[in-house]
Image (cartoon, rainbow, N blue to C red; front, side):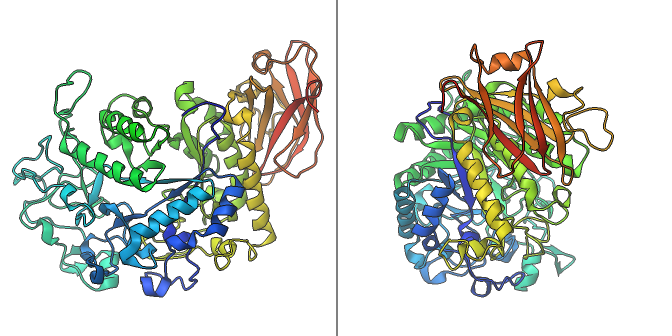
Length: 619
């Protein structure tokens, strides 16, 4: 990411149009489009965009806008409903893409004009001073994929189905001796003649077959090379082929040691996808499961995208611990080297969650951070559509939405990398109950027609004024607005980080509770400093659900004092800027050149962003 201080810190608001603007409060489990309704592009009106901009966001990630396989029947415009055996949920999975060049007709007031309405939305977003990110889903497409917008760019039209792997094929093809018993492809929607797919049960039909793969079969999106994928596989999708044979590791594409290899056809077609959306005005891409696609493709594709528009933003959903990654090396570093602005920070998210749902301590965070290259390019989040809600029943220790305050404050303030807030997080959306295919899993469904019971109170009939929110929800939303504003300031936007827990493990005044003999279970602390502007912050977060931490003393060792480049005659005044809690904070020196920050009380589930203001230089 460009560290130039003229560029604002990237702060992303993730929303699914299907959910975000939907004010239909029927919420019938497995309800149809007509019953439960859906949000529209038009619902992202000026009032919504002004409010999101004012909250501090720079980018909107419009999740799930690409046209996916669905039960909705738009035969009148040439888009019939999909085979129920290919569906997960009546709305369909946003990551089973039916046409990479199209948007979902559900979101248009006039479905035949959906691309024009999407382009109008992009114009509104830009007029509000925001930028747009959409999904790029390079690893797989829906089994029923067929582009009506650019049919000449369809995948698989010229493939040689007699080969499992060919670098110029778009797909991988099952062979007669592939596991699962041979043709036809058998989907896990029917067992012993009975419907087992939740979606097939709702629709009352399904036969475990797909007409498009009766005489041949394609490898499933999660690398399952079987004629009979299982119910937990991505059986509704098929894997795209980038010239990398995931079964042997063979690399048949241009690379440093084989520059003369031809560019695979899938590379060219996926580049056409990026060309299409950039031409419409999309500003960036969140790339789904990017670690399952060769980094060499990303280097090629991102370079071409930046030749078209230099500041196009790329973020990679990637997990280095996934066996499906295409390189044995650290795939996160490989993706950043390929040109990504940021990669997901899954380890920090999981470590914080395990403080509540496992046996982790706050100290364990420090062992996760490698070199600055990755540290400052990690996209950090406390929620997203794949993860449970902070307020989800039985999740995060059952603490509730308030746990988001210390968790988000820790994650958002750590580095210069982008931060993400998932719609509903700011009002404590709990995602309770079973919506349909999504089930009762503490996640807001991405598969069903639904609306969010708490967010809809803020949407308030598309006035986006929060008039129906409770006082507690209003305070939570105001907290996130203050946090987002602070992490855009120089110390967080441009500065460096110095972590302090290691220097306070033996410090008995560093947040010990319940007779603990070591420190750093519930308290996490670090410094942020921007040398150019001299802005200094101490970040403290009490992660404990009920215990206030009293007489907290945070030791800043000599190396931390040197990190802060203290003036010769410091006159530093500690000022807490994030919370409205009043408590005494004092700063004092120590004989060994260290310093000590004393905080009279840090309430439970409370973060402090303490600016160490140099009163000699600044008013």
